[in-house]
Image 1 (cartoon, one colour):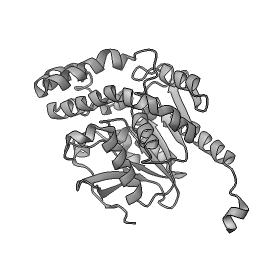
Image 2 (cartoon, rainbow, N blue to C red):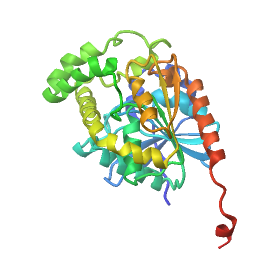
Image 3 (cartoon, rainbow, N blue to C red):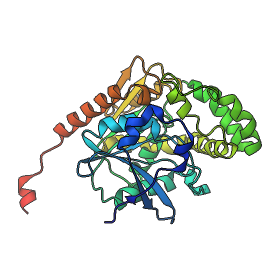
Image 4 (tube, helix red, strand yellow):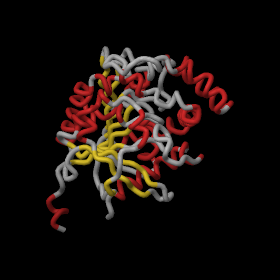
Length: 319
């Protein structure tokens, strides 16, 4: 099985302030893998390649930098692979209509792990990445050993609209309907930190807004937000079979304004097999601001689940 070749740092990273993730960028390896569509895709690799495998994915349109601190911690135990949505945040990646479809994203997931020769892996996904994991698992593209969903969104279980769903999502949907002219105008309203330096207090928030200064990128991101909104209807019927086959953890903070914590609470009520860690504080950007806490929960869950795994049958193994 061929593996990805050493690649180069994506060009979009040279245009932003990455001073808050210097240690992480010192440890990441940039890999290039050819997809079935002929395009070259960038993978971000942390840790020892011979270790247990873990796939760590951001939500649609978000930079891997937001997960890099968590990846660096998890890499003490795992070989960690990350990739980003096609065309956003890396505008140098050609984008096509199919990239917004869950089926296309699931096929890409399967292609990556097969290309890398990964037979077994754990999955950790932040926010909307839970949509992709549910679809890819339910449709047989992947079979993770465990899944950990951090602030899951887009599964169709939330009883309360988050601040993002009430305020920002309608703007993105309007941009998607009206194109780049609206992207330029409305993007300025969303980019509240555009003139402020990337201090530790707002670094994570600024990294979520990399798409806003460029109207074309804002429009691409808005198309992902349309897909996210529409994919809820596709994903919800799949959740039961997924949680019935893969041990899954949901971690959510009560003060999360991007993804309301009722998504995870309702998941645990409807599907008792899922384990819930409901934290009082941390917000949606805890994945960047406090990765140690999240890593502890993920590692504790993985270890507990692996210890419960049935021992292989001796007679079968000798057959």
